Image (cartoon, rainbow, N blue to C red; front, top):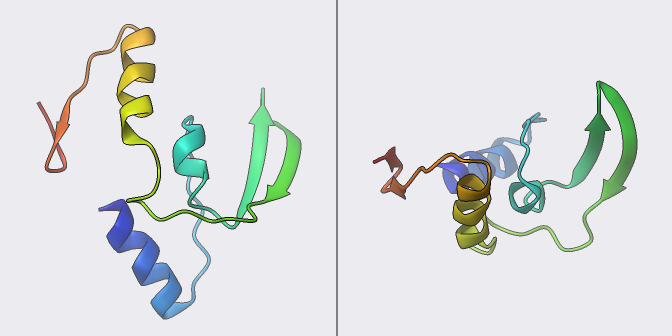
Length: 79
């Protein structure tokens, strides 16, 4: 789904705002606003924007385990 949204954004040339706690997903953005407690801490531009297939999804899985959540995503569904 993320790959489809990113391709659609490029094709139709619209601005998209995505909110995530995941640094890997942030690698798919041109510009990243890093926030803490509702305040912008840092703004940066990714020099090497990655596709949804280029980011490391296994790190997302590990991060979920560390936060005491255990989600398994299979074909876009939570199992």
